[in-house]
Image 1 (cartoon, one colour):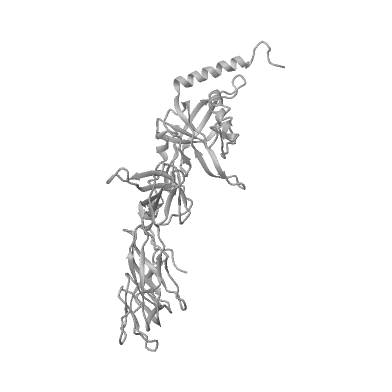
Image 2 (cartoon, one colour; image 1 turned 90 degrees about the horizontal axis):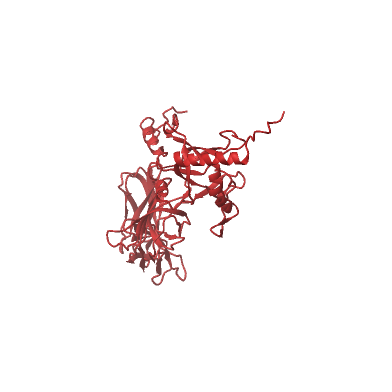
Length: 475
């Protein structure tokens, strides 16, 4: 039997009336929240996983807060990583308001058009709120992520649905790009995620050096025959004096493998003269609280005897490459630079091979970072390291105010790194074209409510000690 024809059972006019009443109640009893649509920048073509996304638009819409006992009871759970705060809220918004106010804009993004420009963002669903979009809850000053959208509740009153119920959970930041031009929203994630602190140097200048050559009977290089063990500090290297001539000098370079410190190599600071291959000098390695290191000297003629620094340079926060020109006939000398990481200057040049066949002093060149810092970085622009090629996004900038407000920044707080920066490289901004030398960097993240790994590790070390033996027994 069909429905009674004398009752309309959901005519368009009745449906419009209910929708208007709901809209009015939301405006009276609701609160203004910010709706932030997620834009997909990069997805995995095989698994369909979102690899990077962005939030750069916001829409203010009225919503009814369907929580009368605070955040959802029982939403705080205990995990193996500690207490996890999953604070949840339910919000009710008008379907009509969403479709008339927000959907048209999202449709433009779906078609690849935003502000008259073609975009490369993906917006697959525009007719309703989407799971993964964000809601900024101003009362709690928090961001919530939409986990589920209920579109059929209440269930078809007069043959239609009128509201969306948004089931939201406290947002856990995962390095998404959030820049919606609302300070209170942008600031909520400024310190979230994995933050790298870059300390910059405004000026860099190349170092320079000169070489002197020796005659017959020089220590050309020192070959390590035993690297020793258990050194707590750098040992001393002593080379016996020749019968007549100049005594050679050298230094030890140490390395650590696990917790064992040993000698890595011996470098020459003065190749000396007057030694003979038939009676080579004795190389003695002492001190450093270790034992076992031993080395032998190889005697050559007409090599580089010493290297002297003419200009220490500035802006060196890693060891630059030292190049010594080749002789007309013979072996090219090689050397390594030592830098003072706190001052950024080249403090010493050490010979690793004195070479042979030099009849005149060779040219010494030191790879530099000669640059003068320019420009001012911009928040949220992408920066690139000149050596590592690493890119990241600027989250915060600390400017120098102790000398002059126009001085360059000394620290950048960056996130969304795609690699690791290298000390001494030039950091260039994509939008501002600002460029300065990277003095040092720190990968310690800011305080993160979901980041308890360090605390867990510290506490665990007090229970089980794996440094000596397996606490569970040996096989």
